[in-house]
Length: 180
Image (cartoon, rainbow, N blue to C red; front, side, top):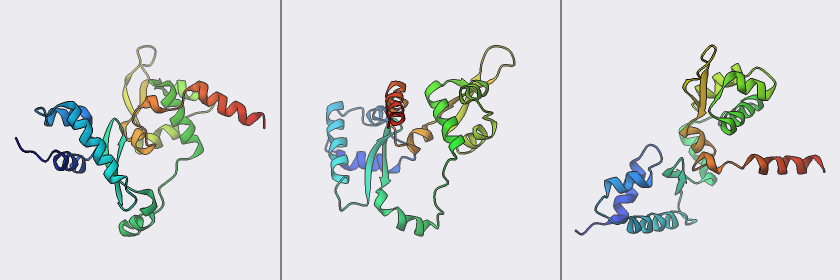
């Protein structure tokens, strides 16, 4: 079999609308050894990290994805007539970080941890598809349960939720700021 493996994997990543996992690539190229696929992916990442390329391959959301280089954002926005990316409000960011660190979590639990009502912020995060409803908690009122989405990972450039700084790391950073 004479395959141009680099070309095939490049095409698969390019055409995928969401991060393409290594497992999915393996299932498509089941006759190719894992090590060979890993080597080609590494070569592609290296090739596209060159300074003269306008796009690169990144590992995010549990898979591989082509993205544009941030230094070209100004021109891409002009082409697409995009306004500046709508930023999340401090309340939405606080709600999102609470959900990310304590998921699965209910609205009442988020509001308790934050000390304020989180209804509006939750609605915003659901609309932006950074949070999703994943079921109902057993117990009185059967409240909805929230979790972060794959879009959350992509939005923040994370490969997995495990890439978030640990609570201990955050406490150390925030604790260090208070002493200055």
